[in-house]
Amino acid sequence: MKIKKTTLIALATSIVLTLNFCKKKEEQPMEEHHQSHTDPVPLNINYPAAYIVNGASNNISVLRLSDNVLTETISLNGATFPHHIYLNPSKTKLAVAITSADLSEGHVGHGGSLPGQKIQIIDVVTGNIDKEINVNQLPHNAIYNTLGTELWIPQGDSVSGTVLVYKTTDWTLQNTINVGKLPSEVTFSNDGSKVYVANTKDGTISIIDPVSKVVLQTLATGINPVGAWPASNGKMYADNEGSQTVSEIDVITNTITATINLGYTPGYVAYNSTNSELWVSDATNGKVVYYTLISNVWTLQGNITTGANAHAIAFSIDNSKAYVTNQDANTISIINVLTHSVTTTVNVGSKPNGVVLTQ
Image 1 (tube, rainbow, N blue to C red):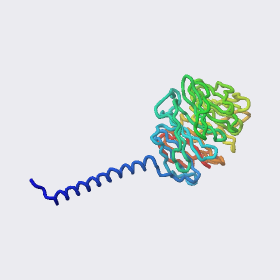
Image 2 (cartoon, rainbow, N blue to C red):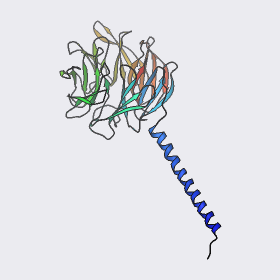
Image 3 (cartoon, rainbow, N blue to C red):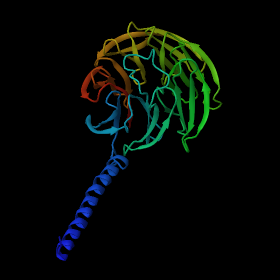
């Protein structure tokens, strides 16, 4: 059969057009995929805010402090079970611990190595992830030193716990410090002169010199301490989940100066310097309980119902408000410190735990 020349030209033209159309169709989704995953649109959080870590939602809720409105949600690049969150001294970067484990019902039995455990460094304004540090053991938190030149990360090994110290200028590992079994939170004293590591499995607190990186002393506290929380009164307060107590540690003498018997499982301890009150979250009953020092004894004054499995406590810069995360209620409670009453309850993500304020 003889094919006309005009028919061949038309057929060739049709094939070329079809190929060009298919090529453009294939290229377009690839470009969109690149833009949405590797070049996220920066946020503009240029206002005082609370950053709330949602452990089961795997993201961070941003709460504008001026009107208590949720304004943004920061994605964590596929990370699972983020936990506590800290600011650098200049309040420009966030450090978020990615644990890959649900710690909302307690810390006993958690630790070791799981896929995806790391630290994420996040820009406060844009919400972009600037750096990820992969680690080998469960990191309960990551905290900056007082100058912002170092990042300290506990490694939750149940046999031989350590603390890693990274240099923040180039993110090189500077020190590995041996501590007790299954370290949870690492914190600094209010004046930055000492570092405290809660060794949950040992029932001890390791006290470290932040300059020499030497362990100065190891104190026996109660059963399953989770963190030693700083206060402006020259003390640290260790919450002991197993024994349901709080141990008061004197920063200067490295001694335990008081033990508070609670009768409930503590989630966090925070000191309000304006009212000279010690606030302890009651994870058992979904409350915050507050104490004052009377005749040198921490004495129960009252409690505030917040939400199921109350956890972290953060005070505003003027100490007039408290922000409390409620892990099993999926809310954050905002409390008037003077009246000891909840003024606002905001729904956030699933299992909120850590919270930090930029003020």
